[in-house]
Image (cartoon, rainbow, N blue to C red; front, side):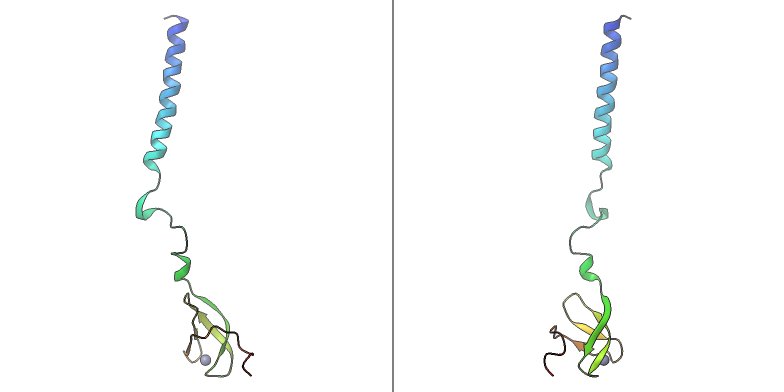
Length: 90
Ligand SMILES: [Zn+2]
């Protein structure tokens, strides 16, 4: 075995490792439904608890704020769809 065949063998080995790495990355890349979801599909399902004005009680109570802009009072379960802040109508 001379130096030329050693160099060609080393080149073939390096190229095969590189191609194998690329193929394995493509093969094991996450695709389909189990891939981590992006965008707004997951945050839209979240509800946030915060203080909000309850029109039924006439005071500020703890509310569950929904994705559609409405909120539900945790004290009396009143659902408020008006998203305007309180105080402007008094
Ligand atoms: Zn209430």
